[in-house]
Length: 309
Image (cartoon, rainbow, N blue to C red; front, top):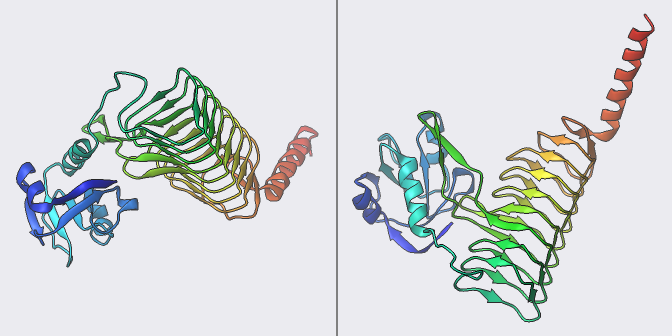
């Protein structure tokens, strides 16, 4: 997530009463979870086994709960509760802005776009040209929609990420500071739900088509020209390549890499990375030919057992 303008590290330290270790002259240009950080970003760590991952990441500013040696070119901000500071910074950059009508502020709509009655659009949304948005659609803050996109009735786009941190036995919600980006020539079916990223973007690639009741979680990146059938769910931060075909009721776990040109048969459960250019089936999903052989072997064993062999 990019800040509206750079924020001096000294200002952050002063406001939250943080100890500074390293180069206090640096400025923050954004913040991100550890897997998405870029130079200039703030990230946080509060578990010692993840210290090295954070310290060696691209992040320039690290909120941390213990004083340690600071790598060159970075700055550490020591806090008893790094998550709370991080979350508060997100709230400051993405404050709650309530809607008092069905259209938010700073809405940009391209020529030729038709928006039916009963559509609700949040703040700072961009909709391209020649789009069609049907009744009952909700489009959340900071969503970007390309050209010639069709969104069918009841789709919910840019809703909060389902992302919580467990602290002292209770779940604390991360403020969703990311956005949804829908590229050109995309079709979103009725009743689909697409969460915005926690700090980054959820992206639907150009030419992709979603059937009804597909769920795309926070930070998912869907490639170009993908076809996804109804009741498929894709969990947070999974990346799917171009030209994927995913049949109905497939479940895909979080943080996975799915290659280009995959085909995943209906009702499969994907729990690991999948190599591109192959057909997958079953739970856990594996190459279809191997899975069918496994099923044939199991049927044969069951038959032998039944017949007393």
